[in-house]
Picture 1 (cartoon, rainbow, N blue to C red):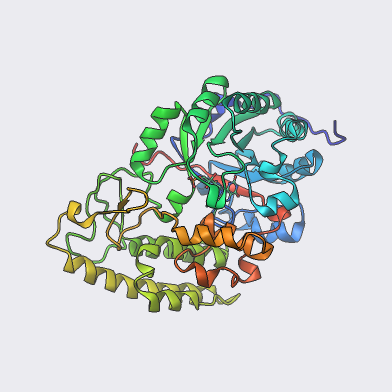
Picture 2 (spheres, rainbow, N blue to C red):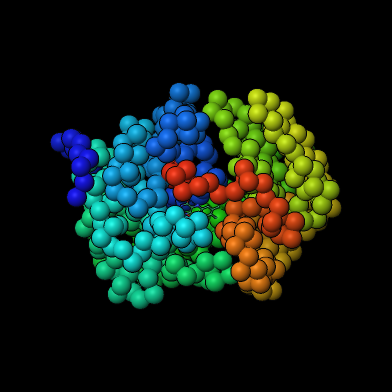
Length: 441
Ligand SMILES: Cc1cc2nc3c(=O)[nH]c(=O)nc-3n(C[C@H](O)[C@H](O)[C@H](O)COP(=O)(O)O)c2cc1C
């Protein structure tokens, strides 16, 4: 099949043994998200790119504090994939293959879900890693339109050597305005059909959705992407958490228990996030930082438009990054003051009184000073639809729909993104999946 052969170590942990002993049986898994998975960990076969983005020299990425770590690749050529995987092999715990990306960039690059009909290629991609790496290979995929085909596909992935399967319960066609709901029934069928651990992905907006998903699918763990971006505390149950960034005094409404899980004030999370960015020796991509801040504080930025604009204008200059992070901090602190003002004004209200229901989804909307999921507005969906023939805009709209850009004001963002902020080219698309510890244990 290939000219590249390496010596496979005598023993390597597989399936559940790997899941338990190396990953620690995680129940909660942070999804791979291009340009949004810090430490920004992208690997490629080209050395300059690798040195810039996979900074093992600083001892952080791939280091003891960054494990367990699974590095994800998209690929369509087994030998190239193996050569790239060999580079990351000493620095991570497994290599994942992205078989789910439905975006235009994946169609052009011929990877992700656009390989879904080429089972031999997929088999070879997985098998070459299985045979030649000392660490396991895993796969993340989308379902087919029928349960039968989905099961057959999952079994093929398993037989090729995948040691964990992450099943995103949406089909390749369910993207953008057609995203709709993930099918947990299909995930359940996959779980029942294979012997390796299965991670369920899709439809998790609130903490409470996690248990519902585990019960409905029988999966070993739940993966969250967007829910986690908008509320990084999504894996925490509802309880009041006090953090170093909590201002004192704060009104009782600042941190309240809700039955949907833990919703910390987003400015608190943003300040903590920025302090981590500042503390890292490894450079963080400015576009990733901006993306995170816009998503975190989205519930308030639509109201506080001057601050949204101020944040949009922050420029992070190479070599003077700390100044850039401090400018962001200034905006966050200003927003925090306004949020404290609003929380104080609502101090006589109970948690129930502060919750409203989104008329189009029936989902709960929490007070605007709290981190919470984002339900895509119809406008963003229409935007993608009407401009579907304009390829440039389609990609931007697609990114918008996938939460990759600031969704606060889609009319401003679409068509205006800087090239540096766009989704990286296919060969840059190696990235990591960070497995979080079970935060409740
Ligand atoms: C910003 C963003 C970037 C993403 N990048 C990747 C990626 O690089 N690889 C991948 O397999 N999936 C990627 N996804 C898809 C997610 O991992 C996940 O499968 C999808 O968002 C559904 O999960 P959710 O309902 O929890 O959001 C991305 C999603 C988002 C929102």
